[in-house]
Length: 76
Image (tube, rainbow, N blue to C red):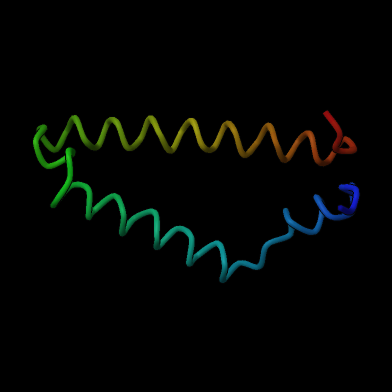
């Protein structure tokens, strides 16, 4: 097994824009699918939207923290 190197982490964060767009599309598609077919379909739309916004906010905070850690030199 190879050892994890900080250069590898940096390359993983340098994702091309088109890949980010694809990921955003998948997230939106899954959210809409959940609204139409899943548990989210059983609660009012405003509740679903608030829950979606909360999840997105949590993901943004997580991404920012991980990005900051990687910029400082990686390693936990």
